[in-house]
Amino acid sequence: MGGQNAQAGEWPWQVSLRYNGRHFCGGSLISRSWVVSAAHCITSSVTTSSLSVHLGCYQISNPNSHEISVAVEKIIKNPVYTEVGSMGDISLIQLKTPINYTAYILPVCLPTANVDFPMGLYCWVTGWGSIKSGGNLPSPQTLQEAQIPLIDTKTCDYLYHINSNVNSLYPIILSDMICGGYKQGGTDSCQGDSGGPLVCSLNGQWILAGLVSWGEGCGEVNHPGVYTRLTVYQDWIKMNAPETEMNMVNVSFNSSVDMNAYLSRGGSGRATPVLLFTWTVIVFSCFISLGVVTV
Image 1: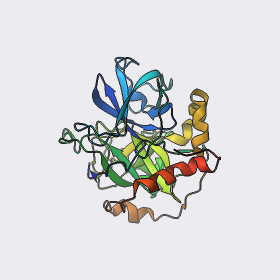
Image 2 (image 1 turned 90 degrees about the vertical axis):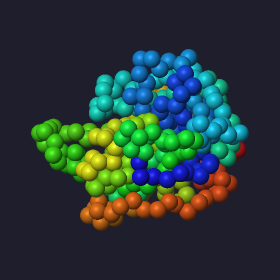
Image 3 (image 1 turned 180 degrees about the vertical axis):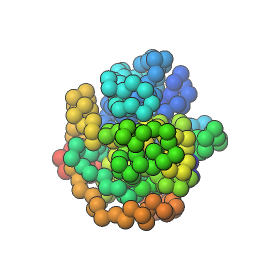
Image 4 (image 1 turned 60 degrees about the vertical axis):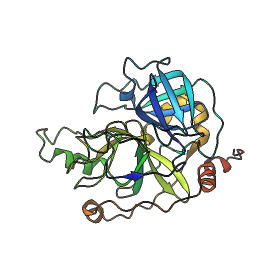
């Protein structure tokens, strides 16, 4: 909601999860064999046989020559998750066959547990979800992108308690969540974006800060989007998908942010277009430092 069309190949870790061939959630490629998504996407009807992972997608209803579909070997849903708004909204999906990286299919960097994503940092959320509550993305369903500032847990919880019947002593935004958006609304992830990436850039590295989790409507005042905070689940990810550890980076973001300035601003324009080759270099900087050969 409030975003714009991405460019083909602009977000090469973005995946489309398909249930019996139909898109229903997003996700992020984090290694040759693993994708991370939201736990709430994995309902009882979503099985390894009914689920497929599409990589290199751009337009859902207009497949391109770079797109591949991969069957699923294993689904791991975080055991803490119980319902919308609970902790643990994260899942891991193992691909049946490890994929080969291309300029259109690349993994995103994962943050180590001690990485701090400061309030007000502008990041990007992407997906093929609704562009408003009840308003589906029109054909050919081009991947959407929106730039939003991060909102820390305490501030986001305060915003959600405004005009809420929930006692302020009981948190709505929990410790494993991070928010993104504007106090006045208008720019947000929405239904169909679930499980997809919230990514932040630092010195050419794109790092997965969060997963689209939940929200009160889409783009409503005082109700920014809520995301699963990746740093909380690094040990769980490494335990279940050890190969992803090579893709984890430890970085430090500038934390000097004017809270009032960003809360009152509207969304900014799109980023400067970046050539596909440059994306390859950016993403693989996670691996280069470890001496791993790129594509």
